[in-house]
Amino acid sequence: MRLTGAAIVVACSLTTAATAQDYLSFQSPSGNIHCMIGAANGGSATCDIFRFTPSFPSRPAWCDGDWGGSFSVSAGSAGSPGCYTDSRYNPTAQILAYGQSISVGAVTCTSRESGMTCVNRGGHGFTLRRAQQSVF
Image (tube, rainbow, N blue to C red; front, side, top):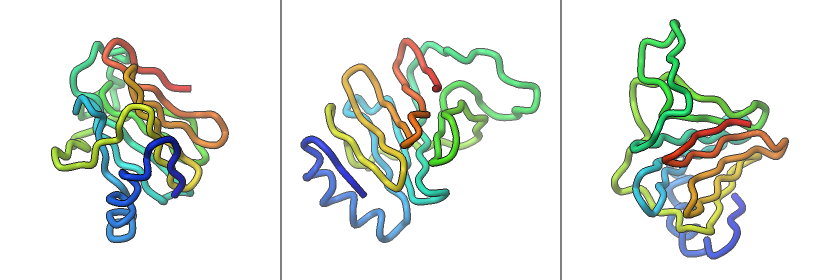
């Protein structure tokens, strides 16, 4: 796991969680975005946003769950919205302060006042903001 910026405080508490559970649960300082990052598939991250203007309003016919508020990326894939029936919401998750990043495997998530971005080493991922969610 590689952390950048002022993430040393977060690293101390999150490292224990990763060893015990093979994933880390964290949230944005606003509490509007909750994420999990782990070592599966060479590194993967999924984040849910709770208060937002949907950028992906059309739920596909195959999706029997909620659509537009959950996004994922792994080491070998582009970012994508997900069909979901559960959530990453964890009120006791560690807060990833603005300007901090956390990396597991080939995926890094960075918290900013403007939103949360998770990206793999190939430059693919997603950015979540209240006003817009994007994949790349």
